[in-house]
Image 1 (cartoon, rainbow, N blue to C red):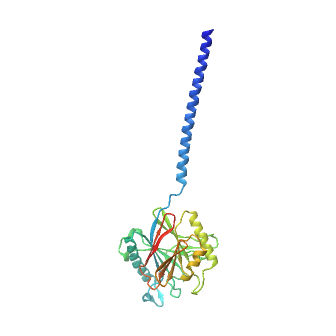
Image 2 (cartoon, helix red, strand yellow):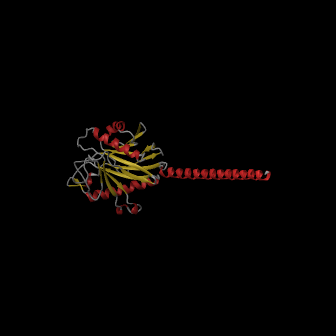
Image 3 (cartoon, rainbow, N blue to C red):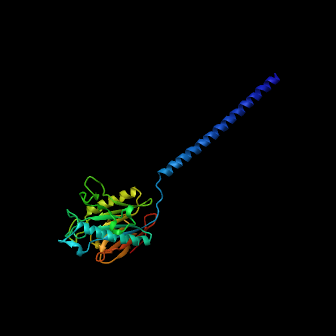
Amino acid sequence: MHNKGYGKLELRHKIQENSDIDHILFSLNMSRTRIILVSIFTLLLSACSPAPHQSVDVAISFITQAPDTMLIGGRYQQPETERWLQRHLQQAYDQAQVRNANHIGFYSDQRSDKPLLTPAFSYVTALVLNEENIHSVSHSLKPQQSIIASNVSFGLKQYGAHVYAYNNEKLRSEAFIQSIGNEKVAYLALIKKSAQTDNAPLAEDLALLGHSVDQLYTHSINKVVLLNQYDERYAKAINKAVKGIDVIISAGNANKTIMESDSCMAYFDKSKPLDNNLYVEFDAFGHVDACTF
């Protein structure tokens, strides 16, 4: 009887030991499972999180008119004007390369009485050198032209150029995006739709631009440049009315830059429109570190 009782006790101990081992193995498996799940969740979060922003340097050309010597019958002719733009665009690009800046050029028609395009309206054209021919001779370059008309209430296509236009069906206007590695710089245009020089920007246009800037930030674009066709006197008022714009470019009487509430007010000398580059240094947070000619 004594031996039988001892055997039962030993059996209970073995069962308890096996149960403890099973419990330890179960705990280990659960720990491994938790580690694997945490690792997978971390990887998924990393994949979904936007990549950290980086600093970028850009060089911006802003040409407001072609020379009068190119007028034929009181109008600028499209082929000659494009060749003129291409030549000076190449020169501006070469200057930007010396400073390791990413170049982009804009041509803004500020002379509605002598338009290049038909039907005539005030426009801003983004001039981007063709990547395949970027190092070719200037006269062989064919710039990709895209009209940005952020506050124009109609859209059309001319010379194969895509028009970025606002209409009543949209909540915001489109932007022209310059990609620099993983970074994006957005360009919006405030188009002047009146020929009168003293007209101030319309409230609905400024509200539209505000919605556009907000939308850009929701898409993680934190570097925003506005091309302003209104008189330079309105630049500060535009900056006050529309938050989130880093650089406001206007045509003025001299090349100069002024920092105003963390934004750069840049004025291009409209009497000397050729080969002027505005150099802007953005930090990773989209702040303007430097803004100079």
